[in-house]
Image (cartoon, rainbow, N blue to C red; front, side, top):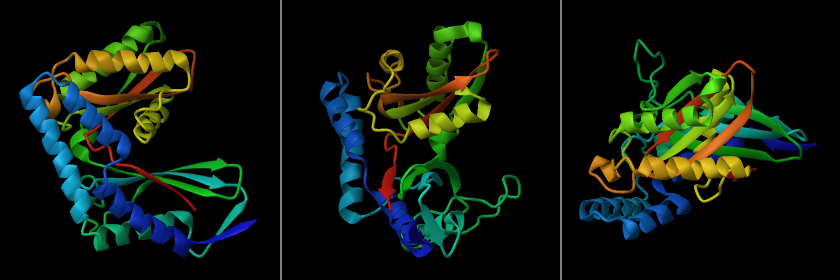
Length: 280
């Protein structure tokens, strides 16, 4: 049995909150660069160049990539051979978030009640999803989810008879309706299967996968390519100003479902699609 003290989790999460908000991931940076080279619109090229410059400034000055530093979302995999001393994992993560958003001078965007709207002043509580794995490691994936894109996400309970075409139509229509609001070029996470809530969780988790890593099931990797092609054919373009780069990538995650249902969720992310993973 390996023992991890909660102080190590707090310290790790604090730094993750700062780093994820200030440093863009290599896959996103590379996709923005290649999109700029392939764009046929001068305006789109200029916008993509500005996004890349913004990312460089954020990195050099260690400042947030965007003013909306998001609601803290975590996917945590707990090894069965570890024991956490001190605070619970949930309390440790929330303490780390509070420190990260305070010491990193990140905008605190969380309100304690969805209707009363009183700010918690430290960006907690975080949204945390837990899984249990073999081994003696604690794997923490963090994504600060901005709500300009989150607000354009959607869930629908399709009929099984809607099939693949129903999935394609819903994803493309969701992106089309979102338009310029999510700060495109966006990354589109798609969750298919399970229940309504499971599909939504899958779509959020899909956004934490490198966009150059396809779904391991060939059928779904082909569907990712099909969706990306159809989304980019919409012509929304970078920041909604037109062009062939409406999305940088489409990631699909799936789960078994009931014979009577076909749940699907689309979670849209902005051009930055911030996320970071650490293993303790």
